[in-house]
Amino acid sequence: MKSAVETLNPTRVRLTVEVPSEELKPSLDAAYKKIGKQVTVPGFRKGKIPARIIDQRFGREAVFVEAFDDILSSSYGKAVEENELRVLGQPEVTEVTDVTELAGGADLKFTAEVDTRPEIELPDYSGIEVEVDDITVTDEDVAEKIEELRDRFGALNTVERAAAEGDTVVIDIEAKVDGEVLEDGVAKAMSYQIGGDTMLDGLDAAVIGASAGETKTFETELQGGSAAGRTAEVSVLVTTVKAKELPELDDDFAQLASEFDTLDELKADLREKLDHQKLHDQQNEGRDKVLEALLEQIEVPLPESIVTEEIEQRRGQLEQQLGMMGMDLAKWLEIQGQTAEEYEEELQDSVRKGMRAQFVLDEVVKKEQLSVNQEELTQHLIQRAQQSGMSPDQFAQQVMQSGYVPVLVGEVARGKALEVIAKSAKAKDASGNEVGLGVDLHADDHEGHDHAETEEAAATDEGGTDETATDKAEA
Image (cartoon, rainbow, N blue to C red):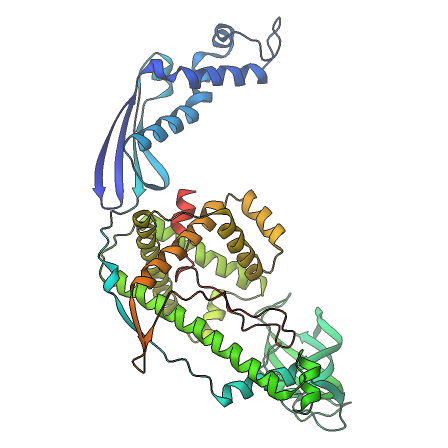
């Protein structure tokens, strides 16, 4: 087999391949065997039909049609390997020998164009300098966390007064369009916390000031359901008004909300957790800035077809999620206060930045000869499962079925690459103190604290980018 490569641009090549007819035999033998198991010929058992009989009955061209995809795929794979190409995505075959000619004994010749990884020359990243925020935990920060705990352990009690913002009301609701009650527009004894119009635009304004037994009516545009996008007349009956009573800030509260005996101990623990979380934030900020500084030093050409594919996929995922919520992209952008042009520009920038970061970090992985062991992959899988709201077993099964393992391996490897760059960089906080960006953020994580369910127990940042477009293209 002979092959030649022509560079079309920094991220795309044209591959020309010639395969002598005698080298096609393994694929043809497999095709004869497959056809022999599928067809019936009198006098022969399935799977035992000679090749000459298949040629006589069905024609040699039929065999080449059956073998063609395998011939093309294996020849293309060998050519990619021989030329040491780092390809992305599927090839676009532009010219290929006709099946009829192949059946007549002609050599296979084809031309394919495919995207490739750009060649990147890494600069010396040991001298990168960045500035990060100071780590400061104030009394106000601790007080805010205490209030969050008080709110979590507060009790809802029925009150004999008009509803106010922050109260929870029990309501019966009925929506009509053109005078007709909607089948999916009726709800009874529904509990609703007032604040932010989280269910229907205008609902908060209607129920604020209403007492138990009062009915309010208002008009609103429905965002979901059978009449999404239409204006409905909504009647809401307030049956109960409840206010949240917060526990007193004392030692009894500390014992209720945590494993600590005193309020001072609880506050000290919250301060320590906040300090740890801000260390996470500082480390992640520093790593992001180091990566940005490195990217500014490197020209990274991007394969436009892969960029376009990733943009379309992200847009499609958002539209699918919005559709499940009964909303379209235009309405979502209106709520976000963003124009379609601004959204597209932001999406383009995000994809391009993420892809550039991937390419650069992958080069660092290659240069530093970084690898991913099973323990690291398992830990990352557990973290990703938590983020997706799935059990590790469920997530692992989904990963295996979808062939997503290379994506996870790539994420872990890039995270390790960023750690290498960060450790070699120089960082100072806003006060001028030196900051090490290679701190093990997990070594001192607290375990077993019930009171806050450790939302503050830091989420890890795997390389400053969540993009996996190149992994998907290669997988």
